[in-house]
Image (cartoon, rainbow, N blue to C red; front, side):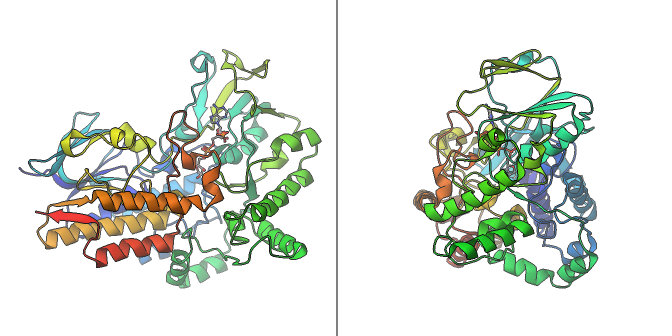
Length: 530
Ligand code: NA7
């Protein structure tokens, strides 16, 4: 049977773009399908006001090309969505990627044909492509969650989801706005929406922790230094659990004398950003240690927010960093503004959306525009939207009925020649996504090359190896307080989703070592055949 391409890649975000480039470098033919009109993935869709990456720009960037590293100029400590999207477009142009990307086309089905050991991939535009391999590069937070709130379709004004924002932007000047949600997207957008809108009403189900970004233009001297030592920075980052070059304090929070502990927290707070999580080594391991961080942040809220009733509502009750930690610019300060109202819907769900606003806690709130900052069906949502069928026609939806099961978050038993970049069971969302996806892309490309060299046409994860990996992912998660609260990490934001801690929390270095060891041991846990 003739193949149309060696590999179909699903998605032209950072993972799909690099996958295409890497496969081409190794002489494989690939076709990328992308539902958007352009490249950039997350940064293509999430154009809401204030959207930024909360990993510093010099680290949230590709490292596969030293030339690219040297020529691209980041302008701020944390890059805006617009700047990251420009970078993605620059990469697409620089490496001439577009000619192998089909835009505005969704992959709807991928089925493995056991007679020919190939995949048949179908799209919503009627394409039918045969490929030896399918590689998903669909992102972990790419399937927007629109909550099933009664009456949502009755709202007369415009409704926007932060994860699917209009390309032309939205000007809220002089308008009244309702925002549902207080996760990262809300925390980034609320200060900006509040500065434009006549009035903003925020509906909060769970109060969240956030650390100030202290964003600033990048100092050219600092950039010169980074560029002169980029390889060293990348090496250090790779040796850290999150794949980000933070200074990790190995001390225990609870065993550190109070005054010293406060000094350390203050220092991290003034520096800003996600590095706050590394202030002590046991913040996610020990309840008492965690409480010291939680109390420190709660005290900061009291310092900033003037109205004690608001302080009470804005104070998170869950453990610190259990939901994804946020990074903000002026979030709590925003609630001191006279044009902002906070409605706590933690104990009573929003009753319904009406034509003029919404009804909650027995009251009607009226506004012109509604913003859903309600997150995503994380990690599995995008994959399960595609009808993926492996051996014996088994569907991925059936296989994952009780939660995702994979070997390394990369492959699955019963689904030969299918790779999932940053899939559930890999470090993915607990790390800097760029180095994480680069590691997956390189592992996959090396694997395909290895197969070609030895004449193998099929690779498949062994069921026992998969089970052992799933158990390992679950066991490691059990040590962390992060697995204990209702977050999107465990699927708790999607009604009916099985409660499983989806990413691998054992750390990036341990994960890389495991992937490399598997290769050294002749693709241990995989069956290769011709
Ligand atoms: P998140 O972090 O999942 O936040 C979604 C927010 O929406 C969160 O506050 C939710 O409350 C809230 N939500 C969701 N459904 C409802 C309903 N039905 N009623 C009220 N409130 C609701 O998504 P983001 O887009 O902010 O961030 C996603 C990730 O992107 C982020 O972690 C970074 O990694 C980048 P809840 O907390 O579930 O009670």
